[in-house]
Image 1 (cartoon, rainbow, N blue to C red):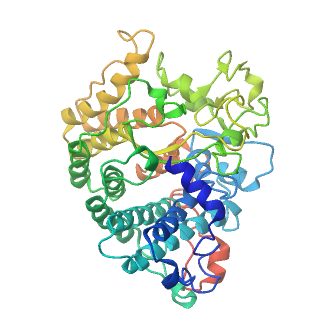
Image 2 (cartoon, rainbow, N blue to C red; image 1 turned 180 degrees about the vertical axis):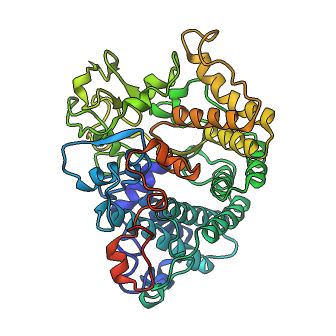
Image 3 (cartoon, helix red, strand yellow; image 1 turned 60 degrees about the vertical axis):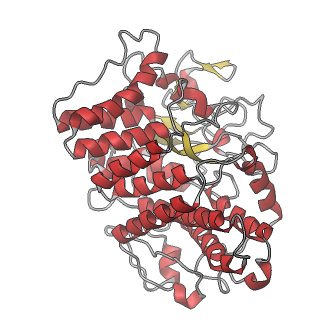
Length: 477
């Protein structure tokens, strides 16, 4: 499968680019003129552009800390070894918090690699059968990296070409301009990408993934009409539908399914390229788990009685916990995350979990549609999409006639409250929560210590400010 091919390739490939975007020799110019001779060369470079997305130990990808620990879902937990995670948990992070520096670097590594691919594709024979597809994948991936940066930092430098070091000393680009570029690039990518791949290429960007990323950028831009239009285009592909089993995404045997619009691939290969969340989120009472991201009781209480999604998301007292009986002592809060955690009997290394991270799944697409239609005051239509998501959960409950009743909302305020609830329980621990609360402008109501006008974004890393005098710090930091 593609994830195994990519990850094995990454171990032998000298990645074209750099460890930071500002302090190396000309980025991406590793004799590219001689490197890009064949389709295989181009694919090798493209595969390297997927690497920064991985949640593995070598990446130090702590995006989950921003999306989850910074929110009301979880506290830092762990053993105190990650001071930055604890700072973010209590909203006392600073420009010197290491997790921001690490995240900034890997996103720009990805952007650089995508630009290298895009710039050098002209060297391939025009008759190449995959040149357009490679272009589409690179445009999509570059959009993902820019979107991640915008979510975390707000305005950031937008880099759309391979640059010399002195050319990288540029100011921040407004968030709105970056979101528009993401939309434009993803629409272009959608025209170049296939609807699906053979099994050997599962995990590569598809037409649906590109349309989904375009829709997500429009959601953040509050362009509700275009969100609805893009969701319609996704639906017209005739590919995606909800799985009957909510937990299908979180079991290795069933994670490849037609609810997945796009996911970050991992594999348990004993090579340090698996999903490290398997170790970071496991209870310290289970094998060599680190116990980070311990679930807050307030989040547990958001699940309605009988909602089956709770047991797939959170472990509580007396639950089966990978062969153990879960006890409150397994976590300082009494609760632990279950998603992206696997039994020790099926992974060869604790830090090399094989579960993928669904970046976009069809349930979220339906919730985008519902949210956009609520904003457009198309309430009955919005509730149709919302109900489709709830219906799946209801059908899995012990008493479908009683639990998770159909939402009845006659106005936008009530419908929006239902939408906020549904995203919280449907997408729990999938790294959306903090960013949702911020874009809804309600984060201060849920997150202790959250300061409006400051904490909507995280600080620009101090190391980057020191390197680039054109950068300015975000307000309040």
